[in-house]
Amino acid sequence: MALGNLSAPTTREASSALMRQTFIAPMLLPVCCVCGLIRDEAGSSPDRERWVTPRTYRTTHGVNPADFPLTHTYCLKCFTKAQETTRQYFRDIGMSP
Image 1 (cartoon, rainbow, N blue to C red):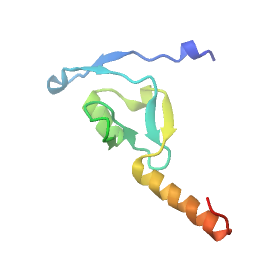
Image 2 (cartoon, rainbow, N blue to C red):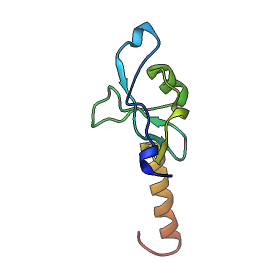
Image 3 (spheres, rainbow, N blue to C red):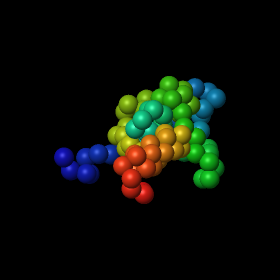
């Protein structure tokens, strides 16, 4: 499959009257690979990420997250847990990470 075929609409308009702002659809939707929360970058400050459920994302933006290609990442909570698990593993086998 060619990369050029993986395109999504760049703008969508929310269906509800309260959300008439134009929504810029992401090319890839960042989803935590552990808990499944979606990073919602719309309206948040760059130094603070907002992680929401797929239902909240659909309600907020008026689009279905399942319609977008996903990229997997970690939310801060799951990343911290994974990092600590990795550190503990290396401690248990006698190596420093």
